[in-house]
Length: 202
Image (cartoon, rainbow, N blue to C red; front, side, top):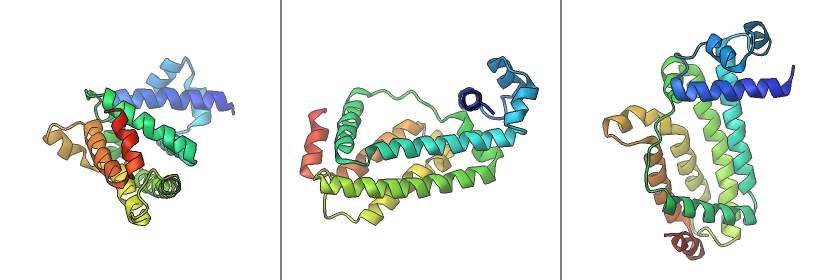
Protein backbone atom coordinates (compact mmCIF):
# COMPACT_ATOMS: atom_id res chain seq x y z
CA UNK A 1 0.00 0.00 0.00
CA UNK A 2 1.17 3.53 -0.79
CA UNK A 3 1.86 5.67 2.27
CA UNK A 4 1.29 8.81 0.19
CA UNK A 5 -2.13 7.60 -0.95
CA UNK A 6 -3.06 6.61 2.58
CA UNK A 7 -2.07 10.05 3.90
CA UNK A 8 -4.01 11.73 1.10
CA UNK A 9 -7.13 9.77 2.04
CA UNK A 10 -6.77 10.63 5.72
CA UNK A 11 -6.12 14.31 5.05
CA UNK A 12 -9.06 14.67 2.65
CA UNK A 13 -11.47 12.68 4.84
CA UNK A 14 -10.43 14.68 7.93
CA UNK A 15 -11.15 17.97 6.16
CA UNK A 16 -14.55 16.75 4.98
CA UNK A 17 -15.52 15.30 8.37
CA UNK A 18 -14.42 18.43 10.25
CA UNK A 19 -16.40 20.66 7.92
CA UNK A 20 -19.56 18.60 7.37
CA UNK A 21 -19.57 15.90 10.06
CA UNK A 22 -18.96 12.17 9.87
CA UNK A 23 -22.58 11.21 9.22
CA UNK A 24 -23.06 13.70 6.40
CA UNK A 25 -20.03 12.58 4.40
CA UNK A 26 -20.17 9.24 2.58
CA UNK A 27 -17.36 7.09 1.22
CA UNK A 28 -18.69 8.04 -2.23
CA UNK A 29 -18.18 11.73 -1.38
CA UNK A 30 -14.61 11.11 -0.26
CA UNK A 31 -13.77 9.01 -3.32
CA UNK A 32 -15.22 11.67 -5.60
CA UNK A 33 -13.16 14.35 -3.87
CA UNK A 34 -10.04 12.20 -4.27
CA UNK A 35 -10.79 11.10 -7.83
CA UNK A 36 -10.43 7.52 -6.60
CA UNK A 37 -12.50 4.39 -7.13
CA UNK A 38 -14.27 2.80 -4.16
CA UNK A 39 -12.42 -0.43 -4.92
CA UNK A 40 -9.08 1.33 -4.41
CA UNK A 41 -10.36 3.12 -1.30
CA UNK A 42 -11.49 -0.12 0.34
CA UNK A 43 -8.04 -1.66 -0.04
CA UNK A 44 -6.91 0.94 2.50
CA UNK A 45 -10.00 1.24 4.72
CA UNK A 46 -12.55 -1.60 4.46
CA UNK A 47 -15.18 0.29 6.50
CA UNK A 48 -16.02 3.83 7.48
CA UNK A 49 -15.31 2.93 11.11
CA UNK A 50 -11.77 1.91 10.09
CA UNK A 51 -11.35 5.30 8.42
CA UNK A 52 -12.60 7.23 11.47
CA UNK A 53 -10.31 5.21 13.75
CA UNK A 54 -7.31 5.93 11.49
CA UNK A 55 -8.11 9.66 11.50
CA UNK A 56 -8.12 9.65 15.31
CA UNK A 57 -4.81 7.78 15.35
CA UNK A 58 -3.38 10.43 13.05
CA UNK A 59 -4.69 13.25 15.28
CA UNK A 60 -3.10 11.77 18.41
CA UNK A 61 0.20 11.24 16.57
CA UNK A 62 0.19 14.86 15.40
CA UNK A 63 -0.36 16.03 18.98
CA UNK A 64 2.57 13.89 20.09
CA UNK A 65 4.83 15.37 17.40
CA UNK A 66 3.91 18.92 18.41
CA UNK A 67 4.54 18.13 22.08
CA UNK A 68 7.87 16.43 21.35
CA UNK A 69 9.04 19.56 19.55
CA UNK A 70 8.64 21.53 22.77
CA UNK A 71 10.63 19.17 24.96
CA UNK A 72 13.84 21.15 25.11
CA UNK A 73 14.48 24.53 26.69
CA UNK A 74 15.06 26.45 23.45
CA UNK A 75 11.84 25.30 21.82
CA UNK A 76 9.84 25.73 25.02
CA UNK A 77 10.99 29.35 25.27
CA UNK A 78 10.16 29.93 21.60
CA UNK A 79 6.76 28.31 22.11
CA UNK A 80 5.98 30.66 25.01
CA UNK A 81 6.86 33.65 22.82
CA UNK A 82 4.66 32.27 20.03
CA UNK A 83 1.77 31.59 22.41
CA UNK A 84 1.97 35.09 23.89
CA UNK A 85 2.12 36.73 20.44
CA UNK A 86 -0.90 34.77 19.24
CA UNK A 87 -2.88 35.62 22.37
CA UNK A 88 -2.18 39.33 21.88
CA UNK A 89 -2.95 39.28 18.15
CA UNK A 90 -6.05 37.09 18.02
CA UNK A 91 -8.78 38.99 19.84
CA UNK A 92 -11.56 37.60 17.63
CA UNK A 93 -12.90 34.11 17.93
CA UNK A 94 -14.80 32.65 14.99
CA UNK A 95 -13.92 28.96 15.13
CA UNK A 96 -16.64 26.47 15.98
CA UNK A 97 -16.59 22.97 17.38
CA UNK A 98 -15.54 20.69 14.51
CA UNK A 99 -18.51 18.62 13.40
CA UNK A 100 -16.25 15.58 13.34
CA UNK A 101 -15.90 15.74 17.13
CA UNK A 102 -19.59 16.34 17.70
CA UNK A 103 -20.53 13.35 15.54
CA UNK A 104 -17.79 11.24 17.09
CA UNK A 105 -19.25 11.81 20.54
CA UNK A 106 -22.82 11.16 19.39
CA UNK A 107 -22.48 8.28 16.93
CA UNK A 108 -19.17 6.62 17.85
CA UNK A 109 -19.21 6.66 21.67
CA UNK A 110 -16.64 3.89 22.14
CA UNK A 111 -14.19 5.48 19.69
CA UNK A 112 -14.82 8.80 21.43
CA UNK A 113 -14.03 7.38 24.87
CA UNK A 114 -10.89 5.65 23.58
CA UNK A 115 -9.80 8.89 21.90
CA UNK A 116 -10.31 10.87 25.10
CA UNK A 117 -8.25 8.38 27.11
CA UNK A 118 -5.42 8.36 24.57
CA UNK A 119 -5.27 12.16 24.51
CA UNK A 120 -5.23 12.31 28.30
CA UNK A 121 -2.43 9.75 28.68
CA UNK A 122 -0.34 11.31 25.93
CA UNK A 123 -0.85 14.90 27.06
CA UNK A 124 -0.22 14.11 30.73
CA UNK A 125 3.22 12.65 30.01
CA UNK A 126 4.21 15.37 27.53
CA UNK A 127 3.01 18.22 29.75
CA UNK A 128 4.84 16.74 32.72
CA UNK A 129 8.09 16.64 30.72
CA UNK A 130 7.51 20.20 29.42
CA UNK A 131 6.94 21.54 32.95
CA UNK A 132 10.13 19.91 34.18
CA UNK A 133 12.06 21.49 31.29
CA UNK A 134 10.38 24.83 32.04
CA UNK A 135 11.42 24.67 35.69
CA UNK A 136 15.02 23.90 34.71
CA UNK A 137 14.99 26.86 32.30
CA UNK A 138 13.42 29.17 34.95
CA UNK A 139 10.27 29.76 32.88
CA UNK A 140 8.02 27.80 35.23
CA UNK A 141 7.70 28.21 38.99
CA UNK A 142 9.77 25.66 40.88
CA UNK A 143 7.19 25.38 43.68
CA UNK A 144 4.33 23.95 41.60
CA UNK A 145 3.14 20.39 41.99
CA UNK A 146 4.21 19.02 38.59
CA UNK A 147 2.03 15.90 38.75
CA UNK A 148 -1.12 17.80 39.75
CA UNK A 149 -0.53 20.59 37.22
CA UNK A 150 0.05 18.05 34.45
CA UNK A 151 -3.18 16.35 35.44
CA UNK A 152 -5.13 19.63 35.27
CA UNK A 153 -3.77 20.58 31.82
CA UNK A 154 -4.29 17.10 30.38
CA UNK A 155 -7.77 16.74 31.83
CA UNK A 156 -8.84 20.11 30.46
CA UNK A 157 -7.54 19.24 27.01
CA UNK A 158 -8.98 15.73 26.88
CA UNK A 159 -12.41 16.61 28.31
CA UNK A 160 -13.09 19.77 26.31
CA UNK A 161 -15.40 18.11 23.79
CA UNK A 162 -17.54 16.73 26.60
CA UNK A 163 -18.63 20.30 27.31
CA UNK A 164 -19.90 21.05 23.79
CA UNK A 165 -23.58 21.28 24.75
CA UNK A 166 -22.88 23.44 27.81
CA UNK A 167 -20.70 25.80 25.79
CA UNK A 168 -23.34 26.03 23.07
CA UNK A 169 -26.08 26.81 25.60
CA UNK A 170 -23.99 29.68 26.96
CA UNK A 171 -22.90 30.87 23.49
CA UNK A 172 -19.24 30.22 24.22
CA UNK A 173 -17.09 28.92 21.39
CA UNK A 174 -14.73 26.02 21.91
CA UNK A 175 -11.68 28.10 21.04
CA UNK A 176 -12.72 30.86 23.45
CA UNK A 177 -13.11 28.30 26.23
CA UNK A 178 -9.70 26.79 25.50
CA UNK A 179 -8.00 30.17 25.14
CA UNK A 180 -9.33 31.60 28.40
CA UNK A 181 -8.83 28.44 30.44
CA UNK A 182 -5.31 27.99 29.09
CA UNK A 183 -4.46 31.62 29.87
CA UNK A 184 -5.50 31.18 33.51
CA UNK A 185 -3.52 27.96 33.90
CA UNK A 186 -0.41 29.27 32.15
CA UNK A 187 -0.31 32.49 34.18
CA UNK A 188 -0.59 30.40 37.33
CA UNK A 189 2.50 28.31 36.60
CA UNK A 190 4.90 30.84 35.05
CA UNK A 191 7.89 32.19 36.93
CA UNK A 192 8.59 35.97 36.92
CA UNK A 193 10.82 35.41 33.87
CA UNK A 194 8.08 33.48 32.11
CA UNK A 195 5.52 36.17 32.93
CA UNK A 196 7.88 38.82 31.53
CA UNK A 197 7.92 37.00 28.19
CA UNK A 198 4.12 36.80 28.24
CA UNK A 199 3.72 40.46 29.09
CA UNK A 200 6.12 41.59 26.35
CA UNK A 201 3.41 40.77 23.83
CA UNK A 202 0.45 42.36 25.63
